[in-house]
Image 1 (tube, protein in one colour):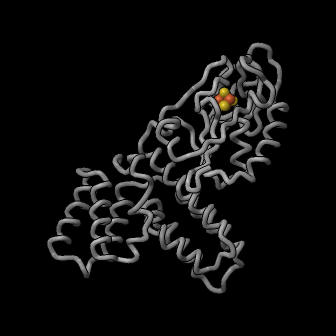
Image 2 (cartoon, protein in one colour):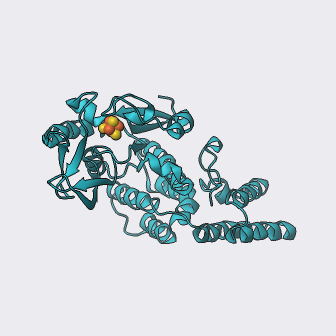
Image 3 (cartoon, helix red, strand yellow):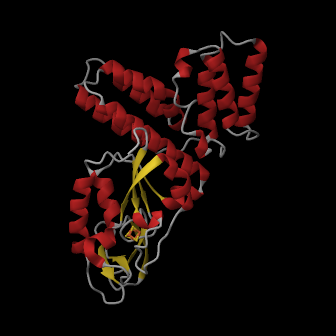
Length: 318
Ligand code: SF4
């Protein structure tokens, strides 16, 4: 794996592997052609790898949503235990892989995040549950960002997921450098402050308080608590209002050094963004330029201003 590449677990059919029940694949072009440039994938097909074969009879979830059974539709055969035993072992192995994220195939009784659950008689019920593999993955690896491929059809959901993936990757890299001091964590937090704020101002304040509180909590406990709150915050969708507040907060750092004309211009651009007339990329680009021009140290380190690879063409959707 390249040193800076993401390591993403993925439902194998999304990569074009012919592992679906009918022997076909479900290749997702965004995943393979765009995200693939920045990631090494760990493909997994629970149904094939647990021994259900290719092709195989379609299965569905039946029963109660907390612990549905996996039933072969045509025969009524229960294959829950087969799938669950394999899943337990596989996820134990994945816990050592340091995955940046996992992308699941939607609607699959094994891989989907929100799948139809039928009655015990096979009749439709308006109930949903994660697939068997996806549920166990989220239970045992709760901090790994997960998403279904269909989220990529919506630009804002896609951006949020990509941002979480890259932040998780930076977090893993940060945690791998030992020993980690409180001041290291403060540095990490400071660099992500605007990014967190764009997702949740409440979370930004909470995390800032956490790392500066006295008496200090033990480092391991502090890291774990910080991680949980950070990635919970990043699941929240940034909005125009949240971005506007974040941009204005960033601008305060430059308030005393900008030329009057520069200040007017950036305020005007933020206002236009706030009114839906410009995409977020515009005020971000101008702030980036001004931060570089005046070498403003806090802004120069902000992940929010220098986010994910430009080739992913993010920050146009809002
Ligand atoms: S959705 Fe999951 S179980 Fe189904 S074919 Fe794709 S990888 Fe295999």
